[in-house]
Image 1 (tube, rainbow, N blue to C red):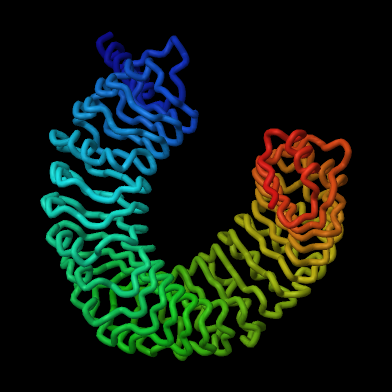
Image 2: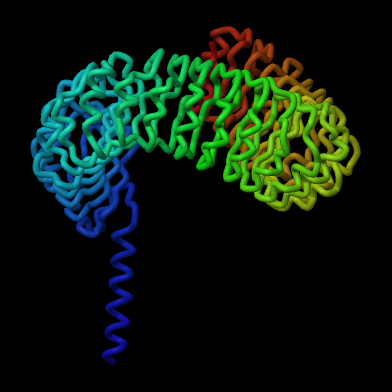
Length: 589
């Protein structure tokens, strides 16, 4: 009996724990035991005031109130003394009540685009006794300065001040003993030199984001932060990475993408501990000759630059897992790419390569992502077989390569989820192509744009797991009714085709989210709307389709958003459409 009683008590405690862990989204049920509720999500409910039942939830630990219309919080908020997580993002609060000082268990507080800037003093003054607040987010609040009492946040590790109007920092911020991450992105008025003289004194500060600030150079005071492990300087107007950066010997991650960088210091290879380096979308003509000495590099991204060749020392980085060299200007790699045996991600697309050999690809056994698009000069007759022998491959992009067929070996790629065959005219001729596609058990994304396709055949129905199908810029006039068998399809793109309508079976696509028919000038709008009536979707895009009028009786369309930009529709017709489809957002410019 004793054993049964113990088992009973254990089962009862498990049930109670399950109830406590449940995420509630309403307090309207009068039968609720409010004291058992520990997690509550009241986001996106257009609340202007909080329900009184909320303050009966005295054991509440997690509360989400984001995306409402709250202007103030009542004094009773101080009763929620066990709160550890509070999200108030996207509200219009004047300030926080002084009773917030009782929330001594609070670890995470989100106030992004939520509170007036002139209430900053009161916000930081509320928490002097809080020894647990670790994360504070204050993005997009038009804050111009941070009060000196920020030093009271002794446990603060993560501080987000992005998208504000900051000018400088108080010296007291250097007294925060454990601050690790600071986000200062989108603060173009900030005096970075004087601010980082202060911030540099925080010995725990190892991750900084100063992206999107219109910086033309990296402030030397930023480079003097000795304990920096991660630096984001992306989306600025920086032109070079200077010698001074080489003193940042603890740097593990550097994101310098989307700048105007033309040169990198030849001494940059002294940053031997760098592991993740992103230089995408700059103006680089070469990489440092000594890059091969940066032996800890795991990820190197140099997409969309002006590289005309690659340093031979690059082949020494045998621990690389990600190498993105897409959209540059080199035609030869210059060494055996098979040395990168740890590679999982390889992008060489957009370089018009001429020298890649089959034996080199065979060594890349761990490769999950491969892009070799825009290299028609490669010996594709010998390359396709080793490519489809890469058993770990999940994404393959071989667009615009003049391929006319694919070998049966592709059916061995059991993990292949996404394939891009766009621009390979004639690749789908015959039934063999679709037979092979149907045998790929994981295939969910297929890009067949610009392949001179005239008919979408009936055997498309065999690709039952497809979620995304791109047929843009083809000569398709009609689609087989079998499209309705693609029950998992989420996105169907038929932009710039000769399509006249789509089959009624489209209404069977219960998971369809997006139907894109941009610049389909031959489409019969009346027939189209009848074909998709009662089909729930997020977006129907009919832009640039030469649509002038809608049928006299507009069918019941369940799209949340209908885009009609670029058409010559009268305002009266748009007005009528909005009246007939009140639940749809009509976008027309």
